[in-house]
Image (cartoon, rainbow, N blue to C red):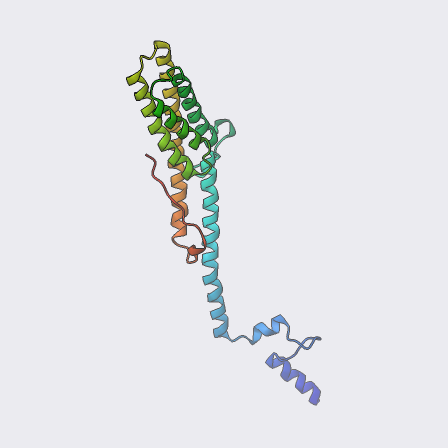
Length: 216
């Protein structure tokens, strides 16, 4: 009888142990007071907020990258037949600049400094890998292209045939510049969403802050 009474008392107090001599998880949880249980629940809720925000932030950063690559726009997948990669846009710009350099090579004594600047700016854009690099290199290349055309016409009697080729190169170049501006604008919008999420993350110091740009 005494043994049975001790077992009943142990069961009531949660003191009965498993075969290993340790309390089971179920029994241990029952030993937690109501106030401690509420506190534990609140801690778990509080911790889940920054974790959820961090995942949302990382997801939006991935979305921004897909926008930059031309795969997504406004949260929707662009049909493959309609996609224009940023690499193609940049290649179109550098190709037009290369055509301009070919024309300038026909007048080697004219606009030498401008030709060198154009060639250098073209090379920088060609090597651009990130949105920041591409945007900055594009700005420099635009100015170099404009300066090269002005200098060529001011110092040299350009043939009518070459003038037509210059016009074609400029049109092609400007067309791709416009496409890049749209791409930067869309990328900016996606980054702004990521930045809004970033500002709400208590642990944002653990992540790199998105740099939002405004297209020229």
